[in-house]
Image 1 (tube, rainbow, N blue to C red):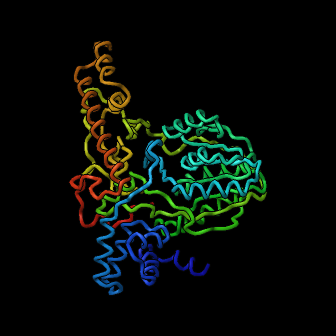
Image 2 (cartoon, rainbow, N blue to C red):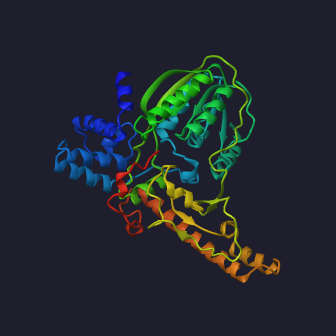
Image 3 (cartoon, rainbow, N blue to C red):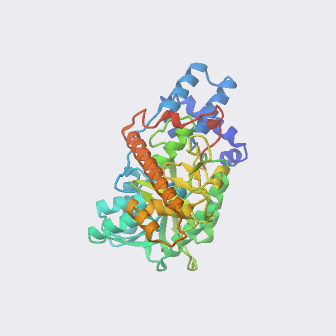
Amino acid sequence: MTVELHMSELPFERRIDLWMLDVLHRQPSSFLQVLRSLPGVFPSAALASLRRLHRADRLNAPTLRLLEYQARSEYGPIEVDLTLPPPHPLNYEWRFTHESAQFMISEAKRRSGVHGQILMLGTPGVARSALKVRPGQGLTFLGEDNHVTRLLEAENNSVGSPITLHRCGASLPAGFADTVLLDPPWYTDFVEKMLRTAAFACRSDGVVLFSLAPVGTNRSAYKHRADVFSLAESYGLQLESINEAALAYETPYFEANALRAAGLGAPAVWRRADFATFRKSSGVVERTDTSSTSQSQWIDLQVGRMRVFVRRSVGATVGASAALRPLLDGDILPTVSRHDPRREGADLWTSGNRIFKCSRPDLVIAAASLTLDEIIARGSSGPSTTLLSEIDATVRLKYKLQELATREAAEERGLILGEETWIEKSTFQHSPNTSMGTAGG
């Protein structure tokens, strides 16, 4: 405990350097092994640490060059369930590996007993695994009202509905669950709402199994963990144990693109979470609102496999240009952190982490939702104020969205295969400083 308190008071870069020295002392065989040995440090921050240690004569040049090369050239292959829509960065969705999903289900079964009730919060990948293995216990899933949940609903219905599925906003019964599986975004405002829901639904002496951000996730990780423990206690949840780095995530396609935009490779299964167990000791938690907070400002659309989020708050200006305007070189945001200020300028966001400015979200929605024939028919049968230029702009947007969807599908397929050429390198205009910041958190 003394060491942790001391580490939490150090500057973030100093903490990473100390963790890195400890890892290097164990002589890791690759940059990927370095990442997996660190407590959740983002790849660009890990690489920056290696360079600092070299400048301080703590790391020799040949080792640095080898690790730098590996950091730039590591490509998948990643495991992707192509029957599910891809995760979108605005949902903050990282999906567990198959092994970790199975581990979560097994732990929930063990904790709940043969006839127990299991609630899954923010875990669509675990719900999908549960559909395949049919654990036997009563299963309930609460998820976002989006394409992923709707697909899970369809599959669940096709196999006899072994899972009770609810969308965010549904009213859950108090204290019905023996075990709650919770994988929230690693931001305290999300945790507060989701942990409160978990505590409300969990019976007295039941358990909440929680994916906890490791201490190296970002510079505020120690404070975030303290906030989690404090919130849990206020909801009558007592911490029983923490199993460090016990849960593994597949690298989502949007994060792979962010890493490539930062001049790095896209390593598979580098991100870990600590596995925390809380027990519901006592106390009554008031009924809580289960509505979503992650995408209230966005409309979730799908073009082919690509998911497209369009900002609701952007007003349509008749006569304004409907073109998708670039916000940065290469269009791909080189971070996955919600604190990146460039996020605020985005009106359209793809599941490949591409962001654009657009003054006509209404036309983007029409382009994504309608066929070409429907777009043309809409113009010919619409009011006289419907401008031919708007019909033309909508058609152009549809072709642009289809082009992006084709590109992103090809990129994702290449990443699954672990091909070094999985993405057009000309897409990225990498500057020397891009990879030096912390892209995570």
